[in-house]
Image 1 (cartoon, rainbow, N blue to C red):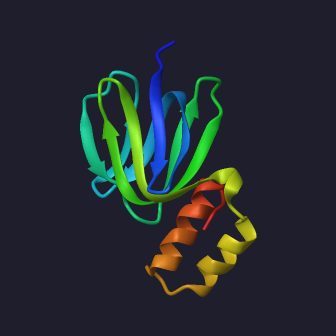
Image 2 (spheres, rainbow, N blue to C red):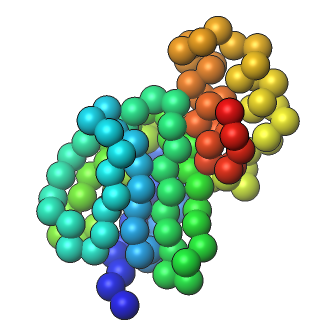
Length: 123
């Protein structure tokens, strides 16, 4: 089975690294799916959305990504974020309250939106 090395790094910490089957993210150009052997690229991530890392066993790792880039090389895929949280680090009730209270398209709204999407919640 084809696999690729994936790193999820925020400014202040490495959040996750490991082997995955694929990565799905939303860039400013649209959604992108990356599989092993993908052509090299550098893309800016769209604010207010999440990324998904599909692990070798088929399970999915949801990630709230706040700013940053997606880098694909022959060696690995890197999600380089200003800040990011794994789905299991997100307090869904707090994110829902922040999303409902924030002005549309504000930084707070975009952050809460990404958290809810990463946690598998509907908007």
